[in-house]
Length: 135
Image 1: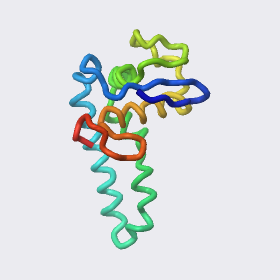
Image 2: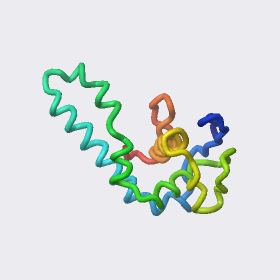
Image 3: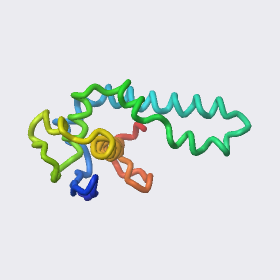
Image 4: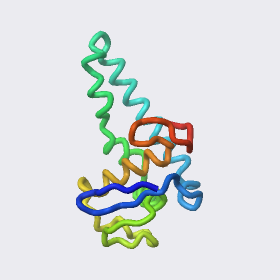
């Protein structure tokens, strides 16, 4: 397990997503992965000869838009609940309403980003860390 401070609050993450939360995420997370790859490829194709200058754009793909088009609110909640062992936020992780009062940009988006990395088995340094081989 690993810890992170998000918006001044301690969050302890699991090393992987338990099946209880992850099973119903397989199809939506594959959709998210495919959308991310397609967006990156579109940027590469548009960059043409300017690819070296476009690397920043590739790594800063509009993840929020892709998330909204790929995952339902229920998927987001399951992903966060599956990835987080404990936290100091007000929401009760044992309920589906745990994320309802989180700040969207300062709390929810960082939680989703970390949860997505855990789901796909990617650690913060970008190394494969076991888990799904889908990216």
